[in-house]
Amino acid sequence: METAAADAAARVRVRFALNGSPVDVWAAPHETLLAVLRDTLGATEVKYGCGEGVCGTCTVLLDGAPINACLLLAVQAAGRAVTTVKGLGAEGRLHPLQGAFVAHEAAQCGFCTPGMLLVAHAFLADHPRPTRDEIRSAIAGNLCRCTGYTRIVDAIEACAGSGTDARGEPA
Image 1 (tube, one colour):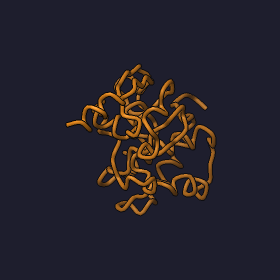
Image 2 (cartoon, one colour; image 1 turned 135 degrees about the horizontal axis):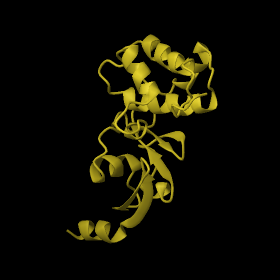
Image 3 (cartoon, rainbow, N blue to C red; image 1 turned 30 degrees about the vertical axis):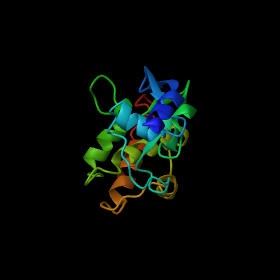
Image 4 (cartoon, rainbow, N blue to C red; image 1 turned 45 degrees about the horizontal axis):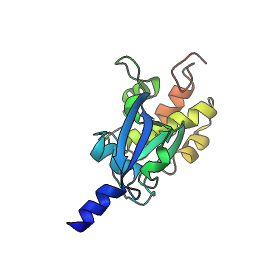
């Protein structure tokens, strides 16, 4: 009982933007961003994989850069912008990268897909015309046990050559 009271007293207020909307949560100093996103905010599109930063399943964008949410403390997100896969599309439409994943059947079970999409999105923002080898290198930190990666690389390559940038704007 005493430990629960101490944990509640140690919580700190964390404010950040989630998919463009401000959020205000209370988190324990040791609580990960992944735990806050899933357990406190209900953002279950962010998946728990290994909990060690190895699989990439929990990838989110922090100020536009991909990070493993299982390794970042929630308090480190204060004042920053966090984007999950739900933040990619606009006005109920799929982002072009999401559309390319559908068109190329780049997702099977879908467990790795949110993290894979976010890594690809950030990569294409900086590399609008990558080679297949560059794409493979960019997604190397995201494990997929279903697809064999070929269709994922195909989808990213197709989006890169689609004439739109990573935001879906004309390139």
